[in-house]
Image (cartoon, rainbow, N blue to C red; front, side):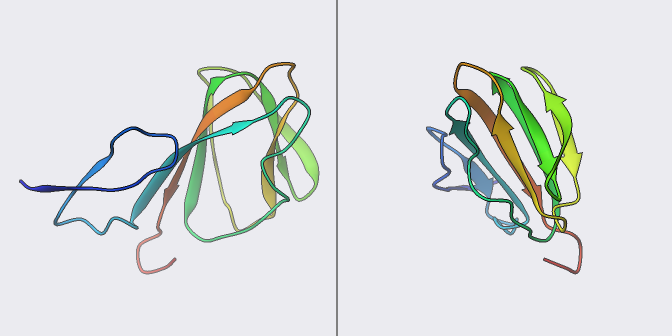
Length: 106
């Protein structure tokens, strides 16, 4: 089975099977400085998961801090609601973002 290299934020290498839509499952590694958020709350289609590699923070949905997250913890959410991560620790928060496209949708 042939694979195509894809440029993915935070990863040295990522390969996707040529018979798969590379947009069907997106992933990347991000980092948030202590006391900050990655970006303003946002929305999009699909299903989203965050997996915390280092640091700690909180998932905010519709402006409410809903769930604390620590290393080796993951959370899966409906990204149609405004959401974002906030680093509540005193060290950088590194995490993986995984977004699956819904069948027949975005």
